[in-house]
Image (cartoon, rainbow, N blue to C red; front, side, top):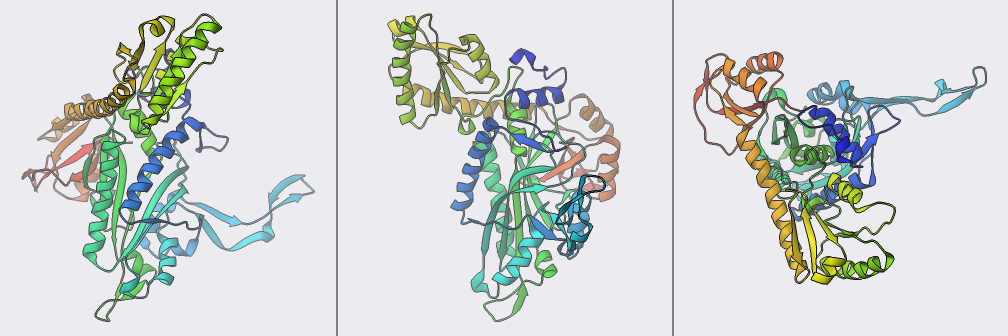
Length: 491
């Protein structure tokens, strides 16, 4: 199966599309720009969802659900917000179809026009803040810490499975606070939650930073982001957390009485990650043989494949394999025993390699005699013969080692593909020949940023938060700069 994959060096984009489809993660649907997430892909998303959901609840958040449809008038209340999403909005104008006897076709009923058109949710700030107006009167009602798991629609013209689709799944947090400081702390906290998840579960190293004004979320005062580097040298925005100030509270007149009895507008945040993380998972780790999944997010940790020539051999092997399966499952390890007789072992090996199962155990009659099994790890493709004694402890430690190794490999790649440049010519040369993250000085103006984007298609991914400030001169204009920012071409 893996032999059918396009090689990364030949065509990275095609390799990605091939892999997503052949590994049974997702496929294109009958609706242009939308995807079907298949069971194996959805099983990974469920693990992402369950982990993040616990992290949100551990930081005091609760889940709720708000309508898919948003009155069009709500969008006009926050000018920069509507400007940011206007081109991507799907609009509902009518609520009924009817049969036209003349043409014998189903048509939109012209008598069923909505009094007010509805926007299919591209993001939920407006509908949520119209709701919060009814929930908030005094400081005693604050903070409100709400998360929503939902689907959203942004009418993309150029789509790619998981990375950019007209409809996608995500979570969106929306919080309300009594003070500027509390809201800002919430924004930073959630960026750190995302970074923790990216590095310790996805095994993807990220840079934490703030967005430039041009790249900021529509309606936000500040956008915090985590940026990851994919194997083709392009950046992927893996999560964002927005400090909204009082913009949406003012737009929807959400006021509260503080402890001194003074009336003030509420302070807000919003934050989200989406099924785009599935794309990051594929592009950050996988190889020409297929997926490489970090064990913490793999639907199947271990697959056991029997090697046999007769039913008697299979029965003997199955008894031992199922006892190993039971031992591993007591450790919380997910195991699949694949004793299907419709496929040969070699085909199964290729299938589980393609699907990124972290550990494969092969067991045959000679292994039973020797009390051993063959263990293959997906991340390095290394094989070894190991005793069945204490195999549960060994596999548990092996999975931990694989998780660490996958992260370290991605970190090494990022370090090897992060460059500092001084001049614009050097910047363009590195960008075209190597790609990656490029650290360069920028004068802080939107004009310079736009010029770089138009001429090179590179954008400021973030202004790093945790790096030493280093004064210098803008690579384009020569004007003073207080620190280097991260540039890259991006998805």
